[in-house]
Length: 187
Image (tube, rainbow, N blue to C red; front, side):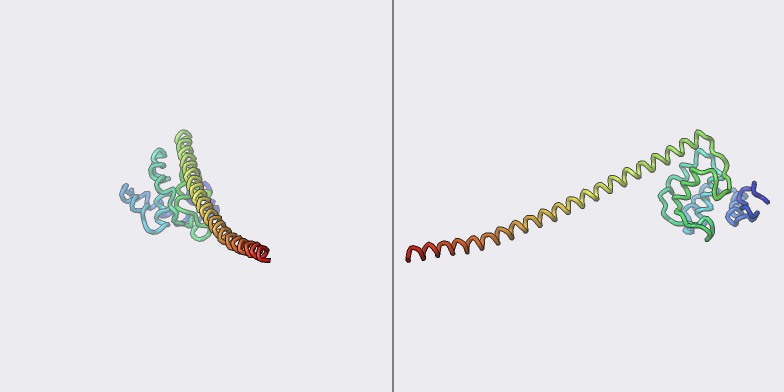
């Protein structure tokens, strides 16, 4: 079959995405045209634009092109209904860090540039994890503080109830003990 050809599956059938990519290669797109595809409203067009970048741009520019979209939560189904959807951000990360796209090979990235990209991805993940931990800690702190406030208010309320409740019986006991003393004196 055609196993060694990019964009051709094991069955020898070229995907429509790679046919469209070939057409994009022949059009010689400008930077503005690529930007408009990246920001298009349809995820399929956006996915094609990112694949186009991966095939056509110099590896040193990959990070600059794809970094702003690593947090993009829009979903895309790269298998055209045959796979599980992923986010555009996950797709961009895979384009940066992997050498293949569903068994279709990308042009190799020089080792030095690949290490730089991997370090940037790791640093970015660490920063996100630290920010998430800080946000979680802040929420937990706010929750604990709120619970502490609730407990303190409940404690004050119980203390007030106990004082009010203990004052009444003590007053009754005092009145009762005073009556007994009065009864003894009279008797």
